[in-house]
Amino acid sequence: MRLAFMGTPAFAVPSLAELVASGHEVVAVYSQPPKPRGRGMKLTPSPVQAFAETLGLPVFTPESMKAAEAIETFRSLDLDAACVVAYGQILKPEVLEAPRMGCLNLHGSLLPRWRGAAPIQRAIMAGDAQTGVQIMQMSEGLDEGPVLLSETVAISPRDTAASLSERMAHIGAGLWPRALAALERGGDRPVEQVGEPTYAKKISPAEARIDWTRPAREVDAHIRGLSPFPGAWFEVESDEGPVRIKALMSGLAEGSGPAGTVLDDALTIACGDGAVRLERVQRPGKAAQGAEDMLRGFAIPAGTVLPSSSEPPRGER
Image (cartoon, rainbow, N blue to C red; front, side):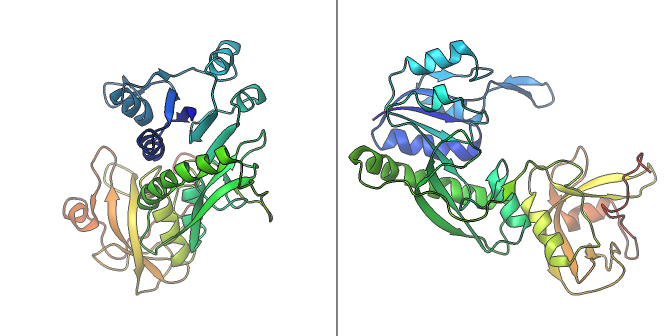
């Protein structure tokens, strides 16, 4: 089939690789424009653009797919279908209807649960036992289209957003050849979504702050669901003032006490019910490290009380 691929982050790269490997003719790759990154703020292409260029595929990075010129270029490609994976732009009806078989989207949840921008993070944060990947026919609404193919993915108690995302990216990539074959032969018809939708809204920095008054299971899920990005965080006092520390991995632990109290020298923190032990952390300007390593150079002694997100951050009190 004659295809365009539209995607931006690392999550989308396995899908592009699978489409090329399965023999489809990918005539164009669309990705978000390069952005300034790193200390030098050098313009850096997205993971999808970088990968596509290694394959010698034509890459388009329009600032907006709503622009008339971008729409006309897309329509001129004479596509059978477009495959979309976390592209990051809203597509107008003129784009959705341009390919002969429409636009298909790989979504990281079991719809209609977790429609929107952050389905993988939200599933872990909510304590879901399973999620999934689905290929759906795109419509104007937010992740509202009928589902063509679906696969369930278990969420383990040790999954982070990063580990689950990587697993789902490869499982989802494997669905593309089957979905396109079904579409081409006209056999399997997409099935309308059933049930009450929930929405995976984008996560704000303020929401990422840890609320130690919540039960330990919820705190642990919050930490893992936001790891590594944007990173759940808490503040601790130091001689130089409050320091914001990201918690990147945790586990449930024995212990109890007033919420936010450091219970031992291994960074076990009391929650509203139970406790969590922080295993991997990151200080500002530092690389991520094991909690034990951080404590050697930045002590947080037992008895320290950490403020919760229910308390206003410094500067907002």
